[in-house]
Length: 479
Image (tube, rainbow, N blue to C red; front, side, top):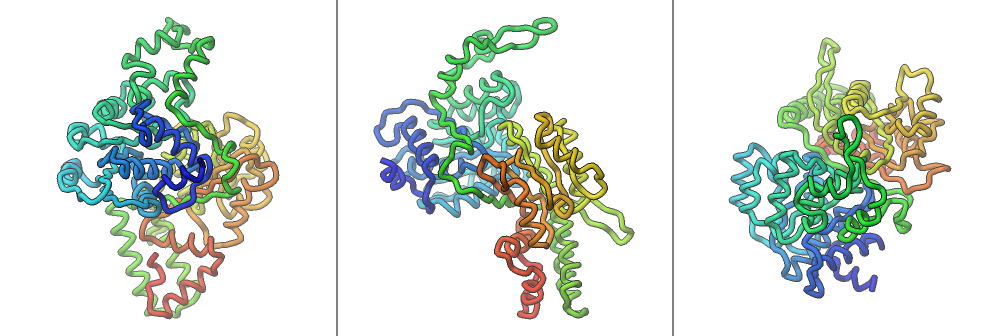
């Protein structure tokens, strides 16, 4: 049976067992193979790092091949729209055309009127735009709507959630992707299931609340879940949901890696291109040495992290692209009740990350230059349930530290030392770790980020590679 399922998955990869099971579960609910529709909505409750996207691509392709769908709408956080484009390109083994809606609302509306018609037609849009384009997206008439990182829909009264409910009501099939639908409160389930399949928990929030909650607290305004109804609640929840945690995926390799491509804002991209061009031109007027080529590289790396130091040594913020991407990853990890390790190179980046965590009111520990009591910071992260995130400066937090309370590490930026890179990665992948480790690299599109990551992962001397590129007549700063 497992081999048959694999043959039905039109992807250019060998799926893991849990991915085959998720695919089979969704196809069964949608009645793909037996024409027995069990539910128009299916939830894949798969933790970060278990491959929700590749399963969704396989489901989409299979449903297209079986004549069930022709149009797909993918709604995701802004920072991961590019991930969907890259993953389809990498894994889809069926004809498709994919359009990421970009630019102003007017430009997005225009894109929707000029979609290519080859193969399965896919439109990708972010949540904020989806509710603003509700009328146009309903007119697009998607057969399958996929909501990625669907914890974004937990607030039932938000315009975002209500817009998605309206779009979902018109779709023939719906696929909801998230690590878990229950974040901190059972109440959060209603909005996501109202979009997914209103037959499960109904269409009235108040009827749902009255069925499963008592009102308590000061003034009887706080919903308190009726614990004695847990079995009924979970039975309904899992009737259309496939649930798997990273710890349960016994076939996953010990380490998985994900490169998350981030697009610089238009102004930041122009600034980057200008400095990149100047840096290359300046190489003709100086001796090409490891030192001067890395000095120029450093400036470009600072820009991708969001900052640039001017001639007066003033640090200016030039981009929020990586910070926005990180914000979405943090939200996902918190929704999944997971701890995170974030590694960064530059001081202004660390300042930004700490400020972001403080705004989100998330407890964190930090080891960076200037932090004297490293041991207490590490101990707090390892053993304090309220300390959810560890922020480390790569050069300062790479040695002699155990951070096994987390199994996911994000590299916000990278320094150029292979030794520092390997040491930093080893902080979570060491004795005491009970889960497979997942590494996420934030890489700005068409920048030196990708070149640095390539050199580190391939264990190539970065400086030598850059000098060789230049001497061969190539721009060493081009990705």
